[in-house]
Amino acid sequence: MAHSLDSLDHKIVRTFQEQPEISIADLADAIGLSQTPTWRRVKRLRSEGIFLKKAMIFDAKKLGFPINVLASVRLHRHDEETLEALERAASEQAQILECFSMSGESDYVIRIVAKGIEDYEQFLKKVILHLPGVASVSSSFTLKTIKSTTNLPV
Image 1 (tube, one colour):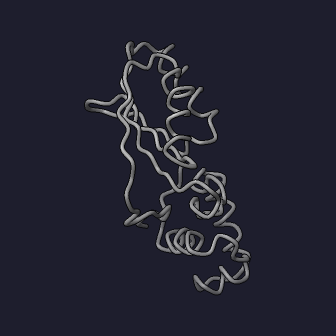
Image 2: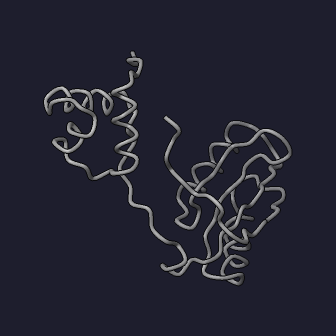
């Protein structure tokens, strides 16, 4: 059973969001607790699944992926087998960074990075249109990133 988070747990989460590589000693200092209780809290938060994983955030443009696409996908069928097959196939594609099951007009919105427009066109033709059950795809290219964060408002 999940433990409710108190103010110290929230401080731990906020600190890790800003400094994922912080040591337990420095974390303890930052939240005003000694090391052992801080370590116990971190261990509990991990065991409860609050921390999914540590990640580094990279600049996609500097790594050769300046194109960011949001593809709205509609399906022919909405049976469990088709949905699970599409989700598995999307999860296996490295250029797909995020895939969301949606309410509303689109069944899925997929965020894709590409090296250029031609690269995305090939990815669309060879991959996206061949995902299980795809009926149509509407692609939108981002012009500028205004805000991008992984930090939750805790």
